[in-house]
Length: 118
Image (cartoon, rainbow, N blue to C red; front, side, top):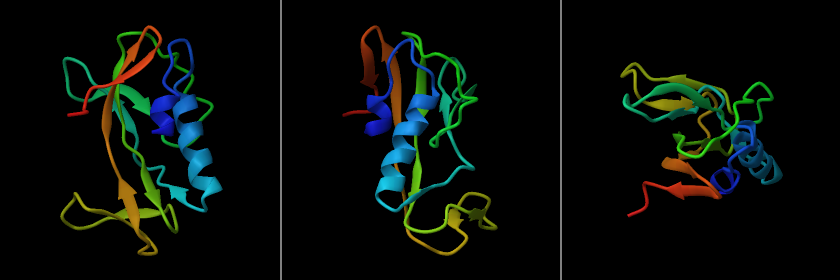
């Protein structure tokens, strides 16, 4: 929710990852860097990438009307990960517990709207 709270028009995408990573680090957790959120448009995945850690190169400014996912994977141990042979399941290399959740967000004129709330 802190990442979603960082969604504001005119601010860089990196604000999202900065908020997520700062909270995880403060609570002695890691953020898996191999996966990111993505843009949503006429195609399900667009080229817009939303890192869940601070990346200064994620400098695209958020604009009203942009739609994307925020879906961090937070870990209690190593953020190093591997994919199982089923080509879908992702686990931490050290076997530590993780949690992952996804929301689709719309950037509005004064902040954001969570489109995936029931």
